[in-house]
Every structure is written in C-alpha cells, then in structure tokens.
Length: 480
Image (cartoon, rainbow, N blue to C red; front, top):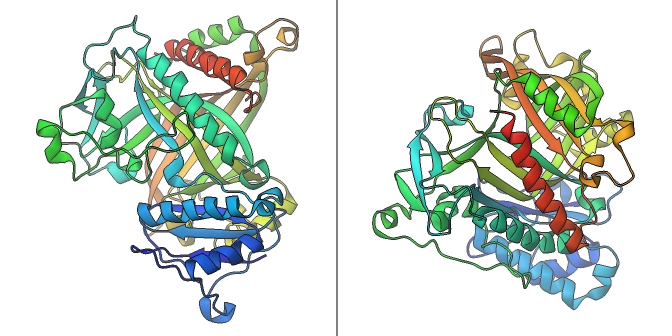
C-alpha cells in the first residue's frame, strides 16, 4: 500500500508527492491500485521517487486500496470527485472489488433549522452574543440568530428536518463503507449556536445558511434524484452588500452548572433509564498538521492510561436546531445539534502500534509519551502547540434497565446511551510553563446516542428521524 497526495490547483493541475498545505477544503479517498492508475492517466500524475517526493508510505491497516488525498479550491475538488465517479462507472470491476468513494468535506449536509419557524420566508433576527465562545473567536464579534415571530403550532421546521434527513440518507447509503469510514452513529447534543462577524441584523430563513462560510465549500444539499444542486445565494437590498463575505459559526456545548439535576434524574427514571457505567476520563484535543482544521481526540483514564484515539471522524449530516424564545442572559432554552457521523477508534495495544505507524511523525511521540503530556494545570511545553484543549470528565452513562427492555416497549430507547458529563475544561496553554490560561469547572453536558437502525430501510429511518426530533425536544425541555 502507498500514500498518494494530490495538490489540486485552479485550473486543476495535479502532481504526486507532498500536499500543498492550504486552510481550505479537501477530500480523502480510499481507492484500488487499478483506479489509481486510471486516475493517473486522466490527471497526468507523475509519481516521484519516494526519497525525493517526501511522500510517506502508509502501512497495512486492514483497509483495501490506496489513500488518495487532495486539497484545493471547491471547483477542482468537485471535478476530481466527478472524475472518480466517472472512472468507477466506466470500470465496474473496480466497484465490485471494493472501491469506495467516501463523502467529501463539501458533500456533508450542514443545515440550520429554526424551531417554531412558520415558513422559508420567515425573518431571522441577528442579536449580539456575549456568552462562552471558542478561543479562536475571542476577538470576533459574536451573534445569536433567532426566529422573529415563532409559531409553536407550525410544522414547517419538523417537516424540513425529516425531508432533508431523508435526502442526505440517500447519499450516505451510496457512499458509506464501514470498512473505510469506521462505525456510524447518531448523536443528539445540546448547546448554543452562535455566528461571528455578521454585519446583518435580519435575514430571511431560506438565506441564512448561505451566510455561513462552512457551507461555501460544497454544492447544495442532495435532492431526491441523489444529485447535488448548486445554488447561488439569493441576496436582496442590504443583504447583497454582504455577499462577498461569510460568517463563521460554532456550537458550544451546554456547560450549565445550574441544570436542575433532580428534574433530569426524574426524567431518566420515568423513561426507565439507570446508571450503567461511571468513569473518569481526560479527553485531549490533538491538532494534526496533516488535516488542517480538523482534530483528533486522545482519551486517557484517571491514571493516564490510554483508553482510545478517535480518528478520521467524518460528519455525514449535521443539523443545528435553534430554539425559539431564547433568554438573552441565560441563553436557554438550549439549541440542539443532531449529527450522523462515522469514526475510526483505536482502543487496544495493537491499535496503539497501528495508529503510531499509520501517522508516523504525527502521533508516534504522542503514543509513546501519553502518560507524560499533562501537568497539574497545564500541558508539557513540547506538546503545547498540539494539545490546545483538555476536558476532564466524570462520565455517567445511562441505559434502559434490564426489566424495561424488549417486548412491546419502545425500541428507539432500547439501544440508547445517555451520557452526562460533569467536568472541567482547560484551554489556552501559555508559555513558559504550559499552564492553561482558562479553566472552567462545574460544566454539565448531556448527549444522547440512539442506536441507528438499518440505514437502507427508508421507512424505518423516517420513523427514526421522527423519534429523534420528539426525544430531542423532550430531553431539551428538562435542561432549562
């Protein structure tokens, strides 16, 4: 197996060797060697000798084919994606032999849904936000979007959620391969969605997602025919002046130390849940220079033994559901995030060796020194640039009690984990000691992980999406 790195330019010109580092979108493919040869002819790739190109040979990881990575502008990436599709159609044996074409960064479906919204023409207000934010947004102006005239009786938001979820499901079924992408799961979490550097004070609901920079890297969402539709932002009046700039966005987990725990516990008991696991966990965010803009997670137990590394995390669907009637000081009720994502998780000693080899020069020293990374209130100096964020969590995992499972009971709840994290966040390590500049204790975060049914059964998935919406509203209502 070998590692192929492609650096697309505009116009598209591709060369094998070390990828040009850009803070712009990319795609990652696992393909068979035969398809690599076909692509080489189409793209006029010239393979350079390994010693001169600097390309690293990837070890055997149990996944078939070559790793092909590309970074560049959205247009050449889209052309490369279409070319892979064309070559796969022209060479059916490659598909039968296991060629896979995973979802690229610009094909993930990201969407904002405003709860209690009346229609796509509803007005969204942009208000100032002074609450918790990501470190990179400290110097940015921050804002909260909210629907101007909410209607609790409207079904527009719910219908949009179901419709767009089913549309994206067809893309998932066309491209997802567990051997390549890892395990797939659905996640419901709670927090606050905010945007940065927005000059507008009002915008139409149908135009809101066009504001977000994260949505400028891909075509429009996948529609019923299974093809992506490219749309230009529809700007009018004041909005047209903003068309050349896009807003940043972030979703901050709840972190509310004042959540009524008795109310939450009563909700879990009434649903038949009980504590199934309890543990202390340190979760270190690892910056990987090979994947700019994306981070991996190293988890250590209370004795700093390695628990797992969560790597190659891929979002296939990410919907932010913005609550109506949000209080401007407490920021409740919380917004909800619904995701379908896949990840490759390394958990045991053999996996540690595989991971170290798989990312030679990136993770080898992390794996070798994982017990020696953290200090009492900081990060050892040599790891500062790669570990910008740490969470210490006391994790309680709730599952249905044994006497509540099976039979005619709720199948949706049967395979669900509800995780309550009581913890402390450490951010902004600083010189010369590596001490964290910001420590936030007493954070409480709640996440629900329902078990995914058969992704290929659309009727079952429709019911699953509907139950996710209902359960997310129920659980969210007790977190205020």
